[in-house]
Image 1 (spheres, helix red, strand yellow):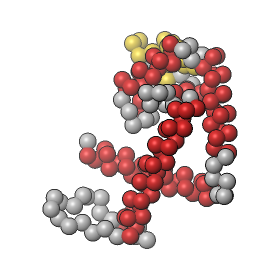
Image 2 (cartoon, helix red, strand yellow):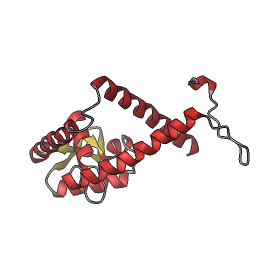
Image 3 (cartoon, helix red, strand yellow):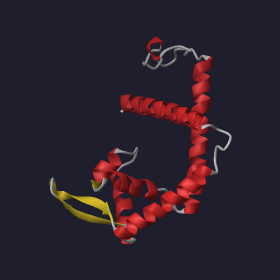
Image 4 (tube, one colour):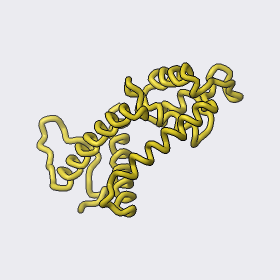
Length: 169
């Protein structure tokens, strides 16, 4: 297996033949499998309420607030590959349901903080328990070490995709 140092980060010039090895093909296949898994996760999330019908991750949004405390909408958007406007829409939707509230931000006069309400914290705990129950029924033939290794690999690929995307921006 070639190391990252052996590979060039520059994309081949237009019209130039690119050399594709079996490692690249394996990575491409893994990425396609992760994408397919994502769409299945999203569909399951919509059925269980972990993901809202328009695709916003209510569970992930509330999880960020539960783990990190009150955050601004721009801070939440920076944690995800999405726009501030999309996160604002989700915050407004969750506020309308009484799950989050906007509070004054001592560090910024105009950018409010978003925090979970008591109802939101209870809903997050409910969704988290459901999420863990769903997760406990998956990968029964995998060891915890295998799952942690797969998690690390997907995280590395995600970082690589993010890096490539930033280079193209």
